[in-house]
Amino acid sequence: MVSRNRSQVKDHLGSKVLNHPELRNTKATEYMSHEEKYRYNLSRATAMLKLIDEEGMDVNEISKVMSHTVSGFTTPDGNPLAVHQVMFVPTLMNQADDDQVSRWLGDVFNGTIVGTYAQTELSHGTFVRGLRTTATYDPASRTFDLHTPDVSAAKWWPGGLGTTANHAVVMAQLYTDGQPRGIHPFMVAIRDRETHRPLPGITVGEIGPKLGQNTLNNGYLLFDHVKVPRENMLMRNARVNEDGSYTKPSHQKASYGTMVFTRVAIALDTVDALQIAATIAARYSIVRRQGEPRDDGQEPQIIDYQTQQLKVLPHIAACYVLRASTARLWEHHTHVTSEVRGGDTALLPELHATACCLKALVTQDCSEAIEALRLSCGGHGYMTASRLPALYAYATAGATYEGENTVLLLQTARYLVKQAGGSHAPPAAGSAVTYLSRPADDTPFAVGSPAAYVAAVGRVARGRVTEVAAALQADRQTMPEADAWNQSLVQLVAAALAHGRYFVVREFAEVVSQQSSSRAIQQMLQLLFSVYLAHAVSRAEGDFITYGGLTPSDIRLNRRHLLRLLAELRPHMIPLTDAFDLPDRLINSTLGAWDGDVYRRMFEQASHSPLNTDEVPASFHQAMLRSKL
Ligand SMILES: CCCCC/C=C\C/C=C\C/C=C\C/C=C\C/C=C\CC/C=C/C(=O)SCCNC(=O)CCNC(=O)[C@H](O)C(C)(C)COP(=O)(O)OP(=O)(O)OC[C@H]1O[C@@H](n2cnc3c(N)ncnc32)[C@H](O)[C@@H]1OP(=O)(O)O
Ligand SMILES: Cc1cc2nc3c(=O)[nH]c(=O)nc-3n(C[C@H](O)[C@H](O)[C@H](O)COP(=O)(O)OP(=O)(O)OC[C@H]3O[C@@H](n4cnc5c(N)ncnc54)[C@H](O)[C@@H]3O)c2cc1C
Image (cartoon, rainbow, N blue to C red; front, side, top):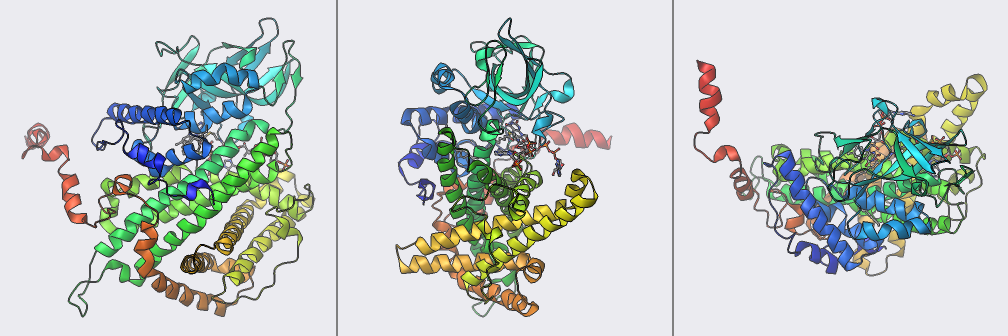
């Protein structure tokens, strides 16, 4: 397993963050103004960046300290330097040529250059080819002219752009030799390094409040014929020579590489948010007692209600399954990236397809799960101090940014139907789509056999993909491509999700089979896997009957099996969430602390409300009494 699976907080780096002189003391931010919150989160983000630099962390280590587990502690309202760290720096490292890297990276690492990734515009986010910011090359001055034709082409959303960044990687339509060349990345200075004032021709600012992550510092940006030197187009892939001649990249979508990386990072990271939410709900569900007293005279712990077990326990199993499969995707990404750098792009299409569908599946599952966990905490889960609303806001943002989930699933579906129809290059050895060109796995379904469940999940994926591929093929004979595609959109999305589910369960099956440290751990992983599989079937019973080979009687048996498994898992719930190794300071929830002292904590947090400072607040005289007159 990758380093992300080691304890994130008890190791050297985690404790460095928790005990760092500028980070260890936290403040409650709920009652701060927008500006105060930003200042607080920015100063902590800056301390983190310095720490990353001082420690000389590699990408795996950075992924741990930037993870939501740790960044929820360092920057609870959103990290204004997240896009700098997660997108801007990786774009320079992977898309700038060697000269450019040596020109910029020193200043990036000493903090002189702070950047963002400016792609999305007001009128175009999903359809990247439709972006309208232009970069027109002039061989006479050897500059690009960056221009925003009208307000709908304003960059809108980039994180850190609002008031933090002084540079941006700007994705713009390149024109050279009078020809449109598509979307390319440009390194653009947007604010003066000393004064931080916007540079001439630049209009820049912050976009305003959002559902959550309010100090990500998302911004807008317009260019009025801003001149950028030729050397500022990132030239590891495509090139514009001094005379304006153009050299194509080795892969037509090479400039989309940062998005692939960030999708993988988001898939990995959203599981962190689920782990925190699951820990909170598990702890609260044993502390909370409510209902008719039982024989022992005590009201029942809410976790002993079967319905509560269904609300909480499958999501703990999901934490384990999704963590392992996304960690493997992260490793695979590292491998493919090094191949691409060496000039071999053969594995890129499938990596893109897998990253799209895992980012979509994980953010969808995790945001639904976090909402279910929030509801499982009743009224108290609605309070900000439970942390559950913020965790939901974080996870659901992941369903939109870095490619809206439906759109990403359609990218995966495009790859899958091509594979099913044999119109794509055949998959490489070890590919995740070889099952499409083999006969269906006919292992008979048997409740209690994880292998039989995995086979059924595979049949659903295969059935979904081949069915929609055939429908699409038939429609293509009678209508234009765009109409045929639109006619199948809903089924294409379902096929991509089914493929994603199969990917996840196969990866976990391998993790379980390779696990050899102890028989007890092996058994616990099997139990978690069984819960995940039985729950997956219960969520999509129709699919398992239609494509998976299950009978209505299997479905009934599975429902009972799931409930039995939940009862079996229930005594292990606390050790399983304790094993996420999240200290109270990182969980930061009135409901989810280790000692279970929920009610005292709730009163303690209420005491911070500014409305409780005076017995009679000034507003009574200013607003209520006046309204009576
Ligand atoms: C220094 C180290 C740092 C380390 C940091 C480490 C870790 C971090 C760890 C933790 C932190 C984790 C998470 C971070 C948390 C929070 C992040 C903070 C904030 C979020 C910031 C958000 C940023 C953004 O949202 S940026 C904007 C993102 N925008 C999008 O994603 C737009 C979506 N749209 C698209 O991508 C494209 O439009 C499209 C949908 C892919 C379509 O593209 P198009 O050009 O139109 O292509 P098509 O015609 O559809 O397809 C043609 C052909 O190309 C293939 N294709 C498409 N894309 C790719 C690709 N990327 N790679 C390979 N191939 C691709 C496609 O399949 C098709 O192929 P075919 O012709 O063979 O079928
Ligand atoms: C918190 C946050 C941070 C962000 N940070 C950045 C950043 O740092 N840099 C940056 O450049 N951008 C950033 N973004 C922008 C983000 O990448 C886009 O919002 C995202 O890619 C979705 O694009 P959109 O807003 O155009 O959605 P739209 O595409 O307008 O989506 C609206 C609806 O249309 C549907 N739809 C659109 N096209 C299709 C289609 N072809 N087929 C079927 N359905 C379709 C979608 O499924 C969705 O239901 C951020 C966004 C958020 C919310």
